[in-house]
Length: 209
Image (cartoon, helix red, strand yellow):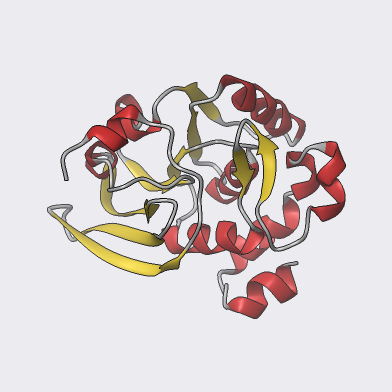
């Protein structure tokens, strides 16, 4: 998986590749799908949600450009697979993750404990972020929103990045926002088309453009 699907498609960050080698993707799937764990494809995890394909997980993580000892916010815990990759990379830093569906969060927490990873979890609307723990060195959103929720950009530290899929079920683009300079401006990049389930968020879908 790492050699062909990730490095072979342009993922170069050796720390990201090491994290992808270390995290057992089969642990984050329903038992009947464990044989498909290393296919480069999204797979269902229940509750209408999916685990992202390995390449997209690696790509989004690489685009965060995380430093060691990072404080990271993840929106959409899902199975916990992306969370585990981030926790490996955070080293002595900290990962905070928010999930909207309680059943998924309970299962993800158990998997993370089995791996010995310390992660702060919260059940709620991820579009609001985690303001009392801000600012963050990186924010990653594992579900698509029609636009970037303003609370998340407000919780970025200077020099840090937010990675989020923007769009609807028909068309989505992976967007990277960097709080540049002293933090007074946002620089946007696009990283190609993606396909994610919608973010479960009243706030994200009710904001004015």
